[in-house]
Length: 67
Image (cartoon, rainbow, N blue to C red; front, side, top):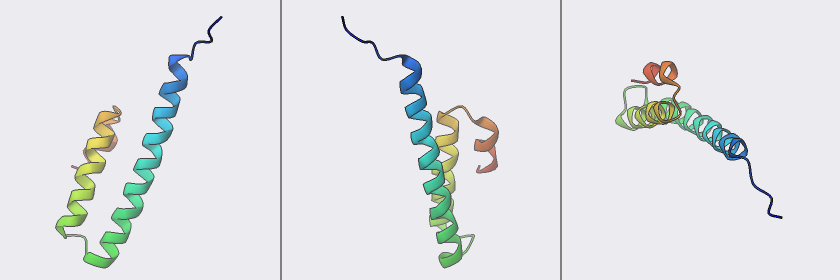
């Protein structure tokens, strides 16, 4: 008899992965802001990627804060 992996397990793995990515983007944005300044294009690029990630995981309110 085969054991089936529940879909919820993969969803939980995906959410955990996304949370790690969000944390990494936030760390990078903090580092870039302190070294390059808040108005640098690199900082803006990180914010765009963070907003896109939030949008993909349906956290629209958080996504809007980075747009």
